[in-house]
Image (cartoon, rainbow, N blue to C red; front, side):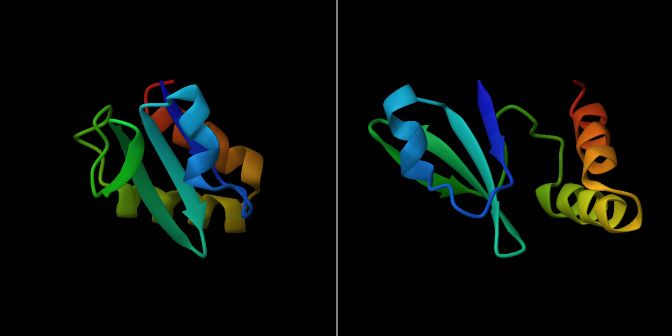
Length: 84
């Protein structure tokens, strides 16, 4: 399971009770990828679920679509890029 959160008020620790293996948080114009390691989250630069995806490129593309069109279009593109 993977959680992607684009809100500005979530904290990775909010996901700990649910034992979400990987959490992507976009805050302050930066994507942070966290992976559950035992009973805590550690920051990583690459997704364990999408190793071929460059997170920085993906975020830049989504932001461009959101600015040019809207957030819904950016989310649809993100799902498409991730195979969903």
